[in-house]
Image 1 (cartoon, rainbow, N blue to C red):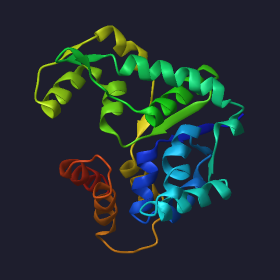
Image 2: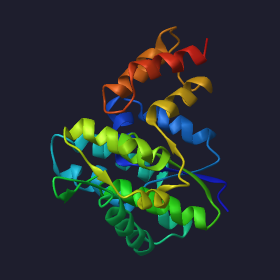
Image 3: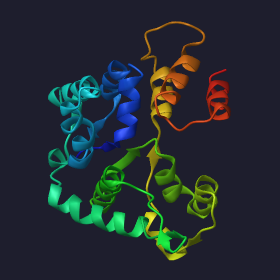
Length: 228
């Protein structure tokens, strides 16, 4: 049985690719005792569709290469079928996107790729397979980690009052998340980063921030203090 699994959402992989950190991802895989997995829905988002769009074609090729090298694998390598994931994915979409309401309508919180990552994580938890979801998207992480903060966050974003179905929160318990910035911090601590410069951690974290990772300047400062 695989010791552990890291499930990648689209955003985390895109951040790594756009920050030119694909090789660092390869090096992380070498020291990870388990599998790097993406769902079919995530693959469609970051490989299949972008391969036909000139603006995103190069990033899609880079990630396809990781699949070809088996750095990234699909759930079938864990004997989990796409059908099994698809059923739970729809359940997560339905519940998450009917948790907050405002102006007489439900508020959209998560998309297909994120929901499929949660679905796969839940399936693996039920099978007793240790797993973490690599996701940069803040809303999904808050839904899993601090759902009581979600309404205020979305009210600030949308600029109108919301009501919440608190009974839905329990459905999102038990997930473990890691951001691309935290993965690159691990790479730095493990000596994977080849550039030897006293400011390299700062440069890595900001490269990911400017390419989509949700991290504040204060969080970056705190990470840097941890290595002093």
